[in-house]
View (cartoon, rainbow, N blue to C red):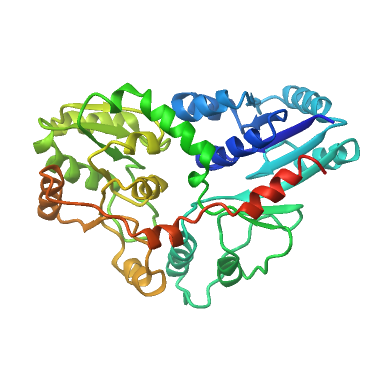
Length: 393
C-alpha cells in the first residue's frame, strides 16, 4: 500500500523548519514514502524558496509542495478534490501543526473512510527545555496572575490520534494541566538527529558566504515592540544602538544580517543608511548554517536562532531591554532560560567591550556538556520507533 507523509504547516516558517530533521530521519528509514507539504498560502512557498536551505532540504526529500490559493471557492474545492483522490486508498500519516486544510474536519472524516489515515498533532514551538516555563511566566505576568498557579490554554490536540511535541510530560502537566497518555510522543531537540546533521554539514561546506571571510551574524526580528502590554522599547531603538557600536568593528569583520519574515526590510535598510553601516550582506541562509563559522551571533530579543547558535558553540550576545517586572518573574520562576553567553541589558559600553574581547580572542567559550544534554535532549529512540511503526500498521 502506498504511504503518504503529509505535513500541514502554520503561517510561521518555524513549523516547517522544526519538522525537517524528523522528515529526513523518517524518509531515510522509509525511502518509498511520498512526502506532501501543504502550506497555508502561496506566500509561504515564496518565503520557503527565499530561505534557501529549507528549500534545499525539501528538494532533497523529493517532497511535493502544495500552496493553494484561498481567494476563490472553486479553486479551493478543486484542490481538495484532487488531494482527496491522491490520498484515497492509501496509508496517510498527517503531521499537522494546524488544521491547515479548508473544511479540515470534514475532509479528514471522509478521507478516513476511504484510507488508512492517522493524525499526529505537532507542537514544536521551541525544542529547548526552558521555553515553556519562560513563555508561561510571561503570559502570567501580562495577565497579572500568580505564575505558580498559572495554566496555559491547551492546543487542539485532544481529538487527534497522537501528540508529537517538544514539551516535556512534566511541563504539560504543570503548565497545561494535561496528563500525557499513550498517544504522547516527546521529540526533544530534533537538530541532534543524524540525517539532519549530515544535511547541515553539506550545506555549510557548500555555502560560499561563510567560507571566504571572517564574519558575525546579526539575527533580526520585528522592529516594533514585542508586545503592547509590556514596558519595552521598540526594537528599532535597540537596533540603532547596536549598529552604532558594531559599525566601529566593520572594517575588520563582515556582518551577515539574517532577516525574520516579520522584519520591515525597507525600514531596516534606511536605518543602515542613516547609521552609515558598511561591510555587510543580507542573507536568508539557515541559522545553523550561518552560525556554524561565525565569530559570534547577536540578537536584540530572544529567538530560536539563539538556541541553535548556542548549541553549536558559537558565542551568543543578547543586547536587549525587557520589561523589568517580567525579568524578575523570569529569574524567580523560569531559571535557566538564558541560552546566551552575554546577556546585556541595554549597556552600550558593555556591548563594545564584549565584542572587542570576542574579536581579540580573549574569550573562550566552553559549553557544559551536562547542560546541553539536559536542555537540548536527543529525540528518544522510542519516538522514532513509534513514528516508523505508522508506516507499516
